[in-house]
Length: 355
Image 1 (cartoon, rainbow, N blue to C red):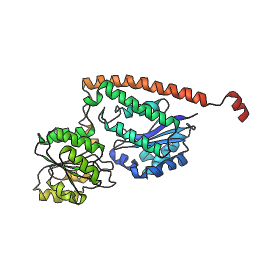
Image 2: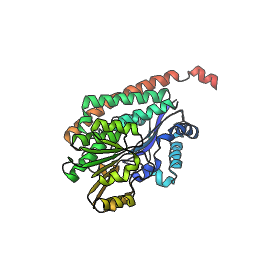
Image 3: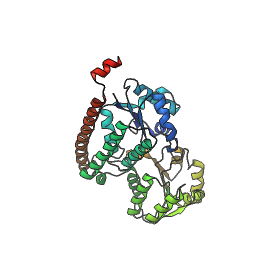
Image 4: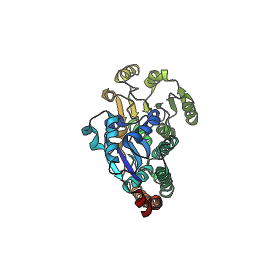
């Protein structure tokens, strides 16, 4: 009988230094799915890898062995020891595994509760797994139901209007550092979903000097046109970074694109004028030592957790309402699963014949 098993880690169980070791670059996903199914022995797989979490969703007939095999797979991928990785891993089996995906997709398990990026990230992860033939009947229905539940949560509770995304929180922090953002020069490195959310909020707050650098010129130019920014080629990075007051990094680079040596040179050319950097990348886009420089204010995704306000009464009411919706939606999926597995289970006559 097929069961849903989830193994992974997130910002609550692991620091960014560990999460970036386990992250799966998108260009590796095509080869990843056959490897998981062969090494772990599961029938269906979907990988969710974001800046805040790395999770493997599987459907398996061998629920007793699957968790340990999934642990071993992640440990091998990290190239670290089991003692370094295993304490940060969590494991969910049914019904908790189903509840977990619904909760994650709805933004209730996010660093900033209710953030909207995760719904897009789950949808993208599912569609990629499906296109690779890695999902089947159970994960297809599971992810479709989870995305439907997230939509209901967002429309019925308004939690997305109450709670800010990580990108929005980073802009809030910039405003606390500089006061008004009007007239401040902003450089955006990367044009992904989180970068777009950040740029939108910057424009709303009055930033009118926006530069965008991204390896995909078409996407960056479109984003610049939407928000009145200017797109530059990658070789302009140091020049434009030296001119900026605020740098938002959100790229898929596998190594630092802003080094301490580079930023030291920039600070000299800008006469040590204050520089605010938010590193939303996982792996990190900025060397940690950059934060040691005078007048440089560096924050990464874990730092943003400290400023996320989760105690607002209106937010708590929306969370409770969201949980009621998810409970109902999870029950619907489990009822479907029970009926489906009962229908597919061999009859007593078939079991006798097999024996």
